[in-house]
Length: 408
Ligand code: 5CA
Ligand code: ZN
Image (cartoon, rainbow, N blue to C red):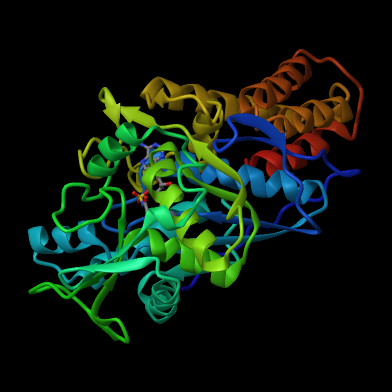
């Protein structure tokens, strides 16, 4: 799939710090230890509606990882999927009388526009589920050959018990797994399954639904195997970061990891499992299924500066759930104006000290609120007429751009 245009990222003096990140699988903050090329897979959207603030928060979070790694001298191989065939798309198509492909194309195009407006660096490989079907079918055949797949009616299921490490991503007890599986697209109660937690890898054709011809028969892929296949094809095992919102830790990341681990006979799928917290609105997690949404594109069309939207997101640490508010956006707009006035000045307090503060905050599990404080302190002092560092305004502009993705 077509990705979106890459913004220019200014080079900063010296190299940044090694990035430490929270890892769901160990429950600790650990250093990331990428090679010259850092490898990251982030689960992409299911394109049946426009990008909302929850999505934006998640993709901006992983964009920060990308930026901190780059600042530390790594090349970053970033892969993202688009779930351009799945139940919600087909349901939306039935509700609206539109073709599911037209919905997916339109919403994916809008997502690209929103990401570009928010200065999110594009993935190197942006891969659709539909274009990955031949690859998924090959992986399912491999799983069959390993004895990890069985049929229920004409659908195919992955035996989670075939992975000795199953459960190591989200670390939930079985009862909780079954409960969440039912809430998030799983079918623990389906008769004929060996284990309630076994997950669908291939769904045979249903009446009035699209299906593809493969050696597995006429049908379409399950959700988790889509991301396992795309990550293996484009990054291979073991990559540095598998990412998404906390709602993906189980079952999605657990299942994808187990499928890949059985396929490769290796462990782990990813070194870090990184999950961004949930953004709520009107008292509930913002979600397409509930319909309580604030869209990035709607604010853009109202004339809101996307850099203010980005600052409103960055004001929250990525691991704390928070509620979107109009006041938060107003505050971000005021901050953007303050920063812009300050970098338009001819001199100000020491710029290198700010760079150091921002770098250490970001390298320590992306402490964005502290990074914003560092720039605020500088901007307020600058506006108060303090400091005589003539290089500072240009450096602060570059720091905001390169590390925070905010264009001043
Ligand atoms: N296509 C799958 C992943 S393979 C999917 O979950 N798509 S999605 O469109 O439902 O979500 C895309 C990303 O946005 C996921 O990482 C999800 O965790 C994140 N997300 C969705 N809602 C919110 C929210 N309210 N707050 C924060 N992140 C969210
Ligand atoms: Zn995914």
